[in-house]
Image (cartoon, rainbow, N blue to C red; front, side, top):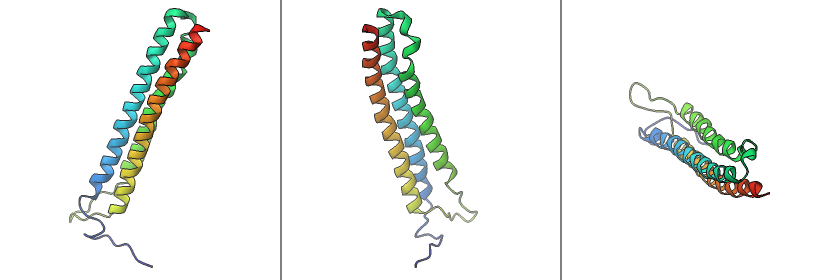
Length: 135
């Protein structure tokens, strides 16, 4: 069994940058997906409100669901950021490249999935709300 030791080979000074890039990517992509879904579903609610004004409040569910995606991105970014260790006074860090790449992958995974979910919620919410208005 091998032992992991904090040193220059396994824990370089630039390793925390990848973790922070993962957290930033998660926040940016998740909030863009949230905004995209909210915009698209909101356009559907506005179009439906012209035809059926009484059903506007009933049909804000896709807008709320798209808004929650930004909160998911915030939660994951905070978890990633809190697990990044600060460097010591001599410049060494205990934050390894493996952990930084794992945090980068986790941030991009959450961000890209929230981006795709935001677009999907927006398109489905737009069509669904308009169909409800035509009912």
